[in-house]
Image (cartoon, rainbow, N blue to C red; front, side):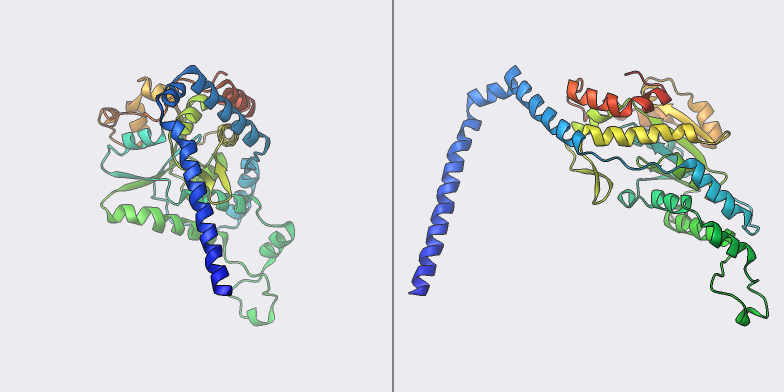
Length: 352
């Protein structure tokens, strides 16, 4: 009896599922009619899609949380403390190039291709970027060391002392120069050596997630590094990203996604504002995407400063962009971006 009931139950479930599927199929048939196809291409269809997009963007804006910016000033002070206790290091020979962008779809890949027309340079593209490795190290360093432990470090016993076994060794630090060398080794082994093994004489990194604080960290590790910052108007950048059809984009996987005008604008604004915090004399050049594709970049001056031989025409001969399908953003998207990125736009010279 129980087996019969179970069989009947399964039969009922299967029948209900089948009926649901048939009903769903019938309900979907209208989407294959000429009337439906016409409606999708008409002003009615455009308006319906715009309304859905607006509702989604407003909901995302109401629930969007930004990423806290790392303080360049605090990080610099922490590095100064570490530097005061550094041992003498060997002469610096590495000259990496760091290409940093104000987020996605700003032309960083195009500029990356232009730079690697010099066959001596390998510029890695966003390796393991969703881990935000550089940002996490910068955040860790910006928190530095408490005044109590700093004093213990200053007063610590010499590691070569004969009385080490009878001394206070609970807080015994290696020299900070060794800490710096350890961080250098991470990037040297991860990015430098693979480039050298492939026959390249120089290496670098292209990123769309890191800003001025991370640049200060990288310069501490590589005093001879050169930095390029590329930006694009946030309206155009977001339009290109939103229309790209990409799967979900993450600032940091899996908890921080960039999936709306609000989250994109906050990310763009944080990076744009960070560059005005750089100390005087910092070795960087800012290039606007609009100037890059408009033929307004002096590549001869750029290659002299970077120590490269650039053949920009080779890279520029390839098709540029192509992901944006719309000619402009909706009023809703523009309003959100204008509100969230106005300060950054003003800082680096973009009008609203």
